[in-house]
Length: 57
Image (cartoon, one colour):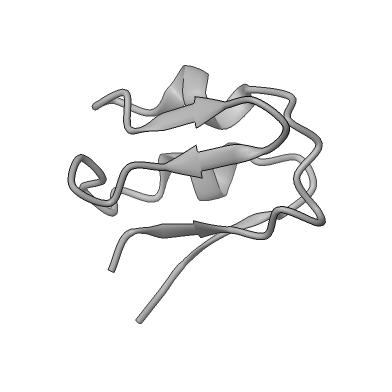
């Protein structure tokens, strides 16, 4: 399953979008992950300073 963003925790800083190797993340009020593009690499999870992103099992 693709990365999941907790929109209440997300600060829309854009760090996740910057490190996503497939440009699967758009940031407006909060980050949003395009499930069809996400490769579940975990780069966004590691980069998020507020731990708002997780990989679903």
